[in-house]
Image 1: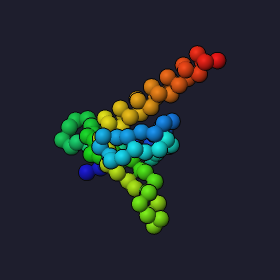
Image 2: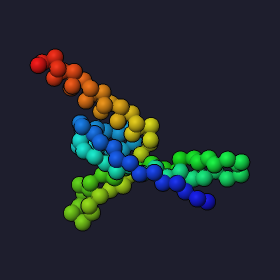
Image 3: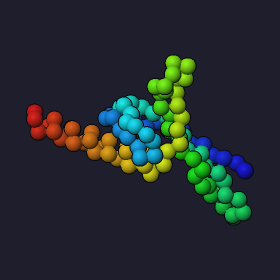
Image 4: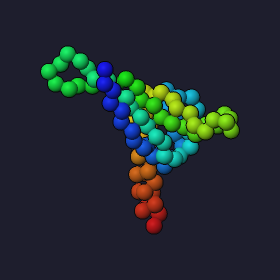
Length: 98
């Protein structure tokens, strides 16, 4: 079976948390990877999502430089939406204060 891998960067302007991952994470840019598997037996190409992971810098040991954790893609999308709302609210607040 042929897998399709999509890589992207998720940038958070504010600290964030994910329901599917323990703890709070600092603002920054994180690598996100989604793996999808080809669904066989169809007359057209179709894929199903197998996993979505995010890469965090490791805080556990100097020997490990990063930690890759599987996340719920809907949870990640919700965190990005919350962050975008905070960015928009901060921009409006700065305009009102000016």
